Image 1: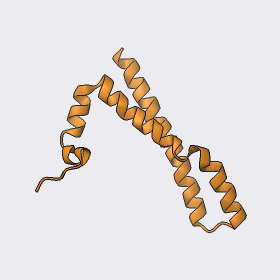
Image 2 (image 1 turned 180 degrees about the horizontal axis):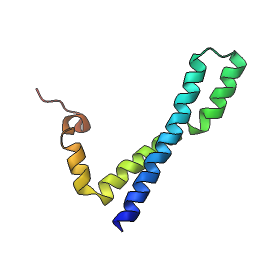
Image 3 (image 1 turned 135 degrees about the vertical axis):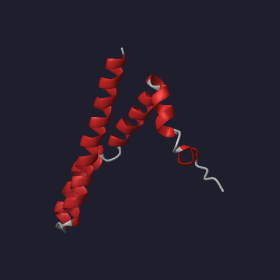
Length: 89
């Protein structure tokens, strides 16, 4: 069963990277200076996927919390102030 969770975790993380790369690639193309029509066309092409890729990241963290609580504890133990939103001092 753990192998299935690892495979699902890898699939979700890979999906996030692919869709995130799509967003960043369109952003880099727009930074090169596109015409207004080309700019609107590129933004319309990336529009449906722009915030959709964040869902894969949230699902990946959900798998870490649900299926691998020990791994999640190890990964986030050093980053507790950042995760909890409170910095010491």
